[in-house]
Image 1 (cartoon, rainbow, N blue to C red):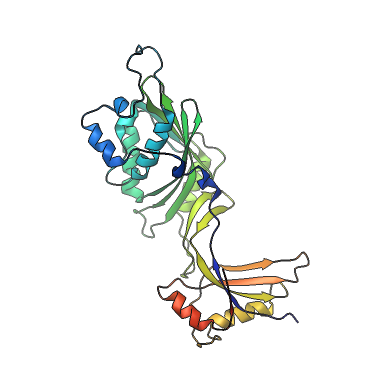
Image 2: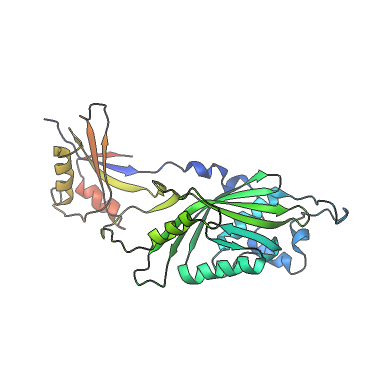
Length: 308
């Protein structure tokens, strides 16, 4: 019979690979400074994108790196009261996603307003980088609640946006969205529409606490998540199902600990085999995140091994 030992682990997630292109590698102009400058200077002059000595018929010099910095500063305001800077876009800007299209700045802004009113979206920008001579790509996550349905379903989309730059004006002339969760990203995509409909359905999940996380990538089959640090109680067992380790770790949260304290159930439960024969198994249960957690856990786990 395998022996079981309870231990405490504080799990600290690895940095997301996508953050290697993060903002730290770029300098940028602050938003407040840009607002003050815009009162006196035009868009092209403010970002120094245009060679004023060149004829209008020729392509102007575009500082794409400075546009990258601008997007880092501007896109987080996509759905807040400040909003994006419309002067950065051509009047005939082309917008496409799998179920929406617009061909003007007014339609582009109308789409943003519609999403803001119907879905209360939260937009998370992961990175921005140049991917072509006149092209910038962004990666993002958008979380939305559809406010018109009583159960207010939450919709999650992750993907990339390809921003085309007009070399004549130095402004964005196109914005094409690609969702990770579908294969056909062309307009009008029935696959994209069905993806939205599926997320609107009524479903119930257990009302249990779970560690905080952000979805970095949501596909049709899996999610890539970035978790905040969390604490687990772990036991070792001898098989994947029905092992003594599982009974011991659940017994711990049901009150079989040094303080006889019952701990609320949480999700998820982690089970991992550490050998090919599936004879060495680790079972982990997440502890609730509470303000006094470190003090309570230290007394409850007195005598157990603490691992970082």
